[in-house]
Amino acid sequence: MSKLIYIVEDERDIADVVAHYLEKDHFRCRIIADGAEAWACILKTPPDLVVLDLMLPGMDGLELCRLLRAEPRTRDLPVIMLTARGDETDRVVGLEMGADDYVAKPFSPKELVARIKAVLRRGPPPQAPGRLMRYGRLVLDDERHTVAADRREVELSAKEFGLLRHLMQRPGRLVSRGQLLDAVWGADYVGSDRTVDVHVRHLRKKIPLLQEAIVTVKSYGYKLREKP
Image 1 (cartoon, rainbow, N blue to C red):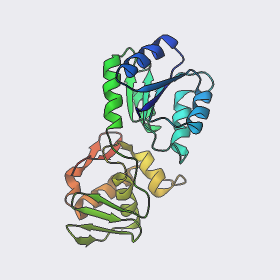
Image 2: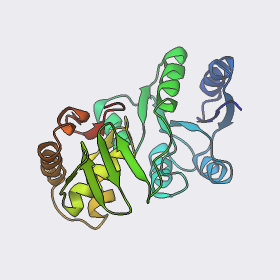
Image 3: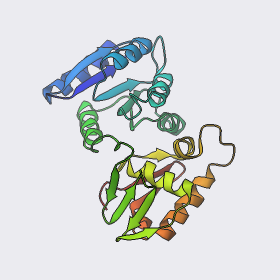
Image 4: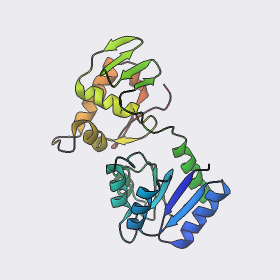
């Protein structure tokens, strides 16, 4: 069955154009004009991806994105922000809230479709806990809490292990320092987000193949390359 895309946009003309181009590429679309209604619809029938406007009635796009990332059932639902507010600060805020990509109006519908396809190609959702996770010559055993590179076990601290696991669960996905702190150190952590940088340096030193595999995104965070 073709992928289902929710277009959460209160400007009907824009939503219709996006839907037209997506349907030409054999996607199924549903247009929703209200943030609160979109949240209810997503919980009832989760789509494969959400195109989300920032300025919405009922609930704005940033709040909806925050709820999606906080809810276990929708935590990994791909989201592309679509908004007229295109300055760097707004882009960073959208990404910090967990958006997978950001497209500013005016936009090319063909480019938007290409970005949607790219996000959907990023692979399956994170692997379930208790399973082996593999990244080239690297194997992480979540159940036994061990990591091996080239069949040799690597000693990691609890935070280093949690950081590596979080990145391995999301190959190719950009993850902010704030998201890593929440996931590994906990939402109550008080301290500098630069502690993430320190632990990434430790991982790169202990596991040489990660020196190039973990990509630093300046002023934002990190991502693990899709292929080792």
